[in-house]
Image (cartoon, rainbow, N blue to C red; front, side, top):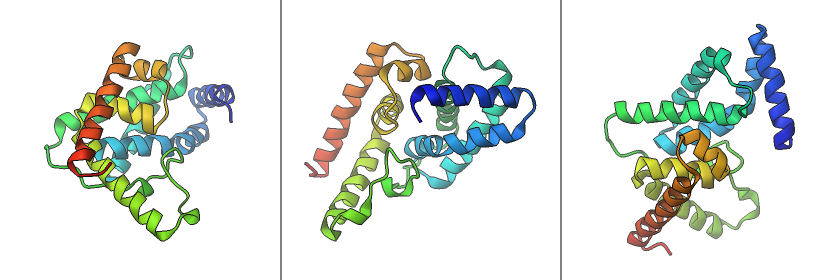
Length: 193
């Protein structure tokens, strides 16, 4: 589905939900669950917390759907809700280190790899690299982690990332550069080059 088709489908579903069709919201949930779960998993570093957070985000979105501005793209709107919710969770939760999460554990196709076409050695090396990358990601300042996850992992444009995070586009670019620099420093500390 092209972005334009996706936007049109979202608009139709939202209109149906606003008219009382709850099944339309189920279709929205089905479409956005992989992306939001991946975002939550990368930001929180815990599968159970990510599942709970994704459910809470959908609940908040459902309750706020009457205030949805149709001039915005739905995915930007729901990602904004998600980022704000995740920020709130970070403020509330204790500062314990996040448990390592393998990229293999996410259902987001932008993150998953096809393991069937790699040798066992390559798969082991890749898994170790992914583990180290998640550890480095967990150590990033939250404002850099948000930008890195949205831009690199979720592949959201600079413009949409800026809108979701409510920051200027140049700030998105700066935070992404700093996130990459910090990630590289963390990986070098682990002697992964």
